[in-house]
Amino acid sequence: MRKIGHKNQKKSVSKVVTGMLIGSVVGATVGWLTAPASGREIRRRIKDEVKDAREKAKTAAGNVESKARELAAEISESAEDVRASVTRRKKTTSTSR
Image (tube, rainbow, N blue to C red; front, side, top):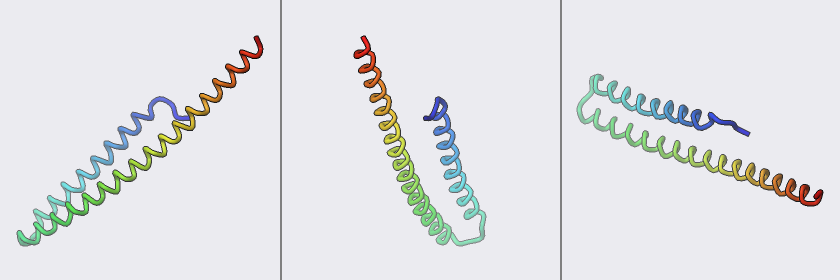
């Protein structure tokens, strides 16, 4: 079972991933703009990179959604275990009185 601090870890991972995505887009754009190429070629490259970034973002969103569903299932299972434990304790205390 995970303890307090798990939310902070999620936020940190989210910040790192966001920073990497933004950094890669900015870096690629600067590289293209400083490279010797025609305006048409640069626009095509930027358009392709934006398309790739969108696809990566969709994939990342799907991965996050999948992980969230897994965590929700784990939490639900843990809650059910706690509920069953409380029920057993209630039965034990009510029969021992």
